[in-house]
Structure formats: structure tokens, C-alpha cells
Amino acid sequence: MLPQMAITPTSALQDVPLSIRLSGLTPTSTVKVAAEMTARDGTVWRSHALFRADGAGNVEVGSARPLEGTYKDPSPMGLVWSMAREESSATAAPKRLREPVNITFSATGETGLSIQTTVERLLADPRVTYRPLAPSSQLRGGWWLPGGPGPHPAVIVLGGSGGGVDHDRAALYASHGFAALALAYFGAPGLPRGLVNVPLEYVGSAIDDALDTVRPPREFVAVEGISRGGELALLVGATFPKVRAVVGIMASGLVMGAFGEPEPGDPGPGVAWTLGKKPVPDLFAGNPRIDWSQSNPEVSLVPGYLAAMRDAPSVERATIAVERIRGPVLLITGKDDRLAPRFELAEIARRRLERHRHRWPYEHLSYENTGHTIAPPYIPATADRFVHPLSKEVLALGGTTEGRAHANADWWPKTVAFLRAASAR
Image (cartoon, rainbow, N blue to C red; front, side, top):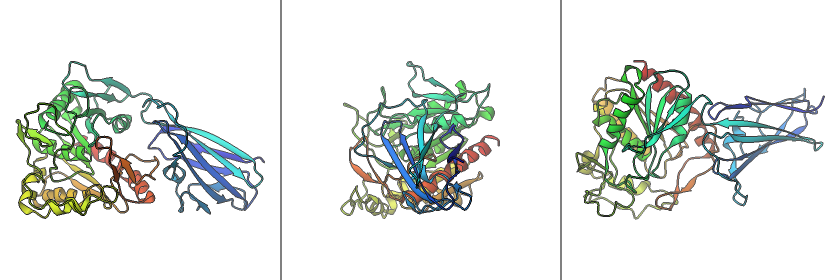
């Protein structure tokens, strides 16, 4: 019997785990399994693990403990989340979001015989359609719409401090039955170039657009945001009663300051958010405890935030009135966030909901050994720092590879279930 490698499914959404099984090997022999992927941005990622076959010549990769490799403990998707970027590798042309990302798995036995299998990973179900917002609209972004006639519950998806549109999560939400609006709120044509003087009314008009465009059942519109977008999601939910649920990923219960440069000639107040053309108070404006001397962006920015959070009047002024949200709230953070103390900042929101006996369900999912890296599952989780697209600084993220992989696999299905339950109320 020749060695065989069976991987299922061969084509599926990114958030679907793989089953990898080797058979026909020499009993108790060793086999090296490697994975290689050219990511959507054209970079090459690789991983490997060495296994010992059982007495029948089989290896169940998901339950087998590697003898050595890029991960240590049994994991069905260890060969994916432990991939590291090949810094010296040539990069291919970037892929469009609808194009599949291929992962090639190869298995090489002691005899040198090698077999390989390639699988496709998708961000959008083939039935999902994309509809960009009209150029005449003041909004920037586009709708990812599920297959089928609908109507579908709506989710507005907000990115973080890098600006622009976050299509990835929106496409996955649409693949799970939600009409998802990937919405830019700065860093796109016709919008502020920096996170400066962004009017909350802008997202309020996106809520109206969702109600008019996709006509969701029971008028269900949720707002989901990540990092500064999570802060914005909480603010919007507390400001506009039409919001029926909020998901804040690495969100803050306090309003933070502006980030980036204002528009030339902008007479605004120079804050992150405005409402009725007035500044939304933030933690740093007039705060006498600001001290960034102990912060190093490549190690941790947390000390600077904690120093500012010691000024009680500033904290009180910047606290988001999350109890005004007219629906359930889900908060998701890592406890080792090095970019900002997001666990503590999200706890401010959770405790406020608790004190006000929020009438709808609320929960804070927090993860050990996880930093500012929470993303949909089954992607490489090895990066512990990144170059910020706006400031160009190298920033520490925090967490461990294993911790990040666990958090990514856990929060996503729970969030989809949360939104389904909320939309069915």
C-alpha cells in the first residue's frame, strides 16, 4: 500500500477546520509534514511538524503530538496557525479577496518518498455577492450579501486605527447569513485622512442605509468593530437607539484621543469623535496624569494608558454610557494586549453594564496569552508585532502563538452565535 494523505474539506471557508490523515506508512516510522501558503498579500508562509506513525502506519494529525516542529501540542490546525512568514522569499502578486488562498501540505517519510495535497481556503462563500456603495453616497465601503432571497439581519463592520475598509470579516459574516456592510470611517476618499473629528452621525447614517437597503428582519442592525472601531461601535450603540446589538473586539469603555493628522483647514476640535459638531470628551484631553516615559512601542504602550487612567475625573469624563445600548453587548479582549490595556478598558464597559443592570445579555470574552491580535480563525498566529499603516511605527502586540490561535478559534463561532441569537429576539 502506497502512502496516502487525505485532507477534508478540500475547499471551504477560512473558518472551517481541516482534518488531515496519513495512511500507508511504515508502522512506527517518522514522517515530516510541511505546509506552505502564499497569502493574499503575496507573502509566503511555512510550517512543519514531525510525527511518528502508529502500529498500523497511520497518523491522525489533529490528535498526534509532534515530535518536533513549529508547534508542540496536538492541534487539528497547528500546521496553519504556526506558519511563519519567510522574510527572504519573493512575493507573488496580491490576490483579490474573492480568490481562494491555497495551502499545500506535503508529507515526506523516512524513505524520502513525498506526497502532497493542496486545499483552498475562502473568505466568502461562492453564493455571497458584493455590492459597493454608490459613488454619490456619503458613505464609503460596500455590502457583502448572503446567497438566497433574504431578508437578512444586518451587521455594520468597522475596522481599526489603520483606516479604510475591513472587508475580511464582513465577507465571512455574509457567508454565515448576515448582510454585512464593510464601512470606512476615515482613511478613504471623501473621508478624514486621520482618525480626527469623525462625526458619529456618519455611522448613524449607515444604520439608516442598512434599514433602507437590506430591510433586515425585525429591523435588526448590529454594529461590530475592532480596536478603535470597537470603541466606535460602543459609542454608536450608546448614541443611536436603532442599534440592536454591539460587538466590540479589543474595544474600550473609555473614549480615546485623536490619531493621525487632521484635514488641512479643519476648524474642528481635534478629537477622535464629534457629535453635533461638538467634541466627544476623551481620556487624554486636559489629563494631568499623562506620562508616556515608561512606554516603548516595540515593548508595550500599556504604561502610558494606565498612567492616564489614574486620573479619576478624566476617566469619568471619557466613560462611554454603554447602558444606553438597546440590545445585547459582546466584548472580546486579550489579557496580554501590549498596544493598550484592552482587557481593563473593556472591563470598564462590562462593569458599567452590570451596575446599571443592563436588561439585555452582555458578556466579556477574555483570553490569556492573547494580545492585540484577535482575528477570525485558522490563519497564521505567529506575528507578535506589526508596522502600523498610519504611524509607520513598529508596535508590539502581545500574547503567544498558541494563545492567539486559541483565542481566534474560540471567539469567532461564539460571536456568530451571539449575533444569530440577538437577531432572533
